[in-house]
Length: 108
Image (cartoon, rainbow, N blue to C red; front, side):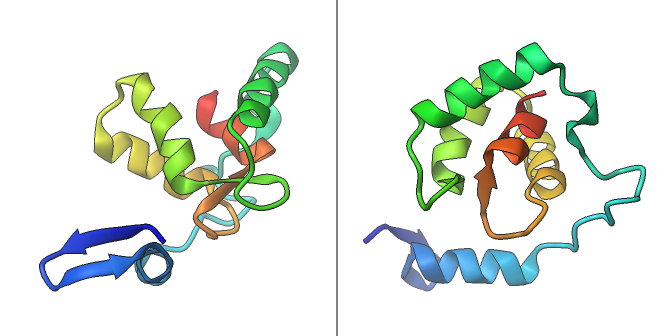
């Protein structure tokens, strides 16, 4: 089991995910101008992102875990707060994982 250390000691990844989910701001509504969608993702980019997504392995059917996605996203060299905001906007269902479409939005 993955554990993380905080000021109060070690906590499990499952508990950490629940706490982060509870503390996360609500995702923008689908009709919000701030909602991220696949509309801006070029078909050739979407195909490339799908290949990357598939190569990462699934945490559960059709999804990759947050830590797995993080490993790929930090390679973008964007600042942490920027990546965090992108994650908030792309993880539409707020489950701490990304579907292939959510991953494509993040990568675009």
